[in-house]
Length: 353
Image 1 (cartoon, one colour):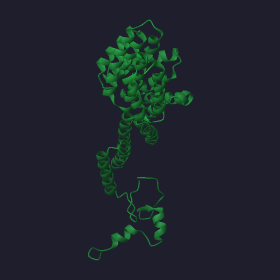
Image 2 (cartoon, rainbow, N blue to C red):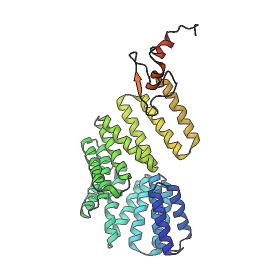
Image 3 (spheres, one colour):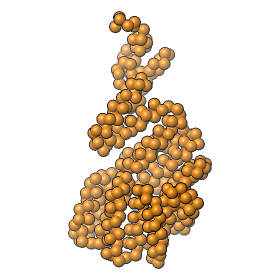
Image 4 (cartoon, one colour):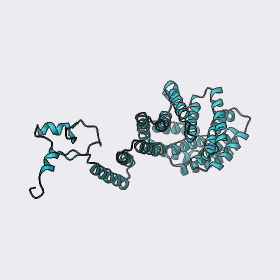
C-alpha cells in the first residue's frame, strides 16, 4: 500500500469514526497498519488508533499502540514524531493511573526542544503532567502545570487546549473543596464549546457538562447537576465513551444519594446500565440489569396497577388519584370512573378473592 492509498484509507477511517461507526473505522485502520509500507502513514494511523481506544476506555490497547508508535518514530528519525509519540505514551500511562511513568515521559517531551511542533505540544504535555500530579495528590505542582498549560493555550490561541485545561482545573478545585471555582472553570469550558466548538468532537461538550454536574452537586444545586449529567451521559452513550459513561453513572448515584432517594438512584443506575449493555450486545450483563431494574420497580411499587407495566422506564402521561396511587392516564380513561383499582383490591378481605 503506497502513500496515496494509505492517506485515502486513513481519511476513510476518520469519516467512519466521525459517523460513530467505530468498529468499521478500526478495521480500516488496522488494515492500513498491516499493509502500508509508508512509515509516516503508519505513524498517523497509529495516532488514530490511540485516540479511538482512549475514547472507548481500552487503555491497555492504547498503550500497546503508543509503544508501536515510538518504534515508528525512531525509524523516521524525526524529533517532531518522537515528541508526539512520547506524549501519547504519557497519556496512555495517565489513563492507566501510572502517574510516575506519565511524569517521566512528559519530562522527556519537554527536554526535546528546538522544533515548532515540539513547542506547540508543550501545552498538552503540561496538561498531562498536571493530571498526573493531581492523581498523586501533589496539588501545588498540579496547579503549576495547569497554569503553564493555560498560558500555552492563550499564547497560541488554542481553544481546544484551553477547554481541556478548564475541565482539569474544575476537577482540581473540586478535590480541594473550592466548589465555586470547581464550577467556574467547567462553565468557562462550556462557553468555549458554545463559541468555538462547531467543528469539535462532542466529547468536549460532554466533558464540560460532566464537570459542571460534579460542581453543582457539591454546591447542593441538584436539579442543575442532574440536567448537566444527563446531557453528558447522552453524548457518552451516543459516542460509546465508556469511561465517561462510568463517571456519569457515579455522578447520578451521588446526586440521588444527596437527595436521599437511594432506591430511585438504583433504579436509574440499572436502567442506564441496561442501555449500555444493550448497545454493546453483552447479553448476560444486560439480563442481570433488566432483572435488577424490575426488582427495584416492584419494591418501590413503580408500576401501573391496571396494565402492570413499569412506570418511570419510558415517557408516559400519568395520573395521580386522591389516594396517592398513580396509573397511566390512558389506563384510567379506559377504566372509566369506578374509583382506584388498587384501593378496590386492598379492600377485598382475604378468603374472598
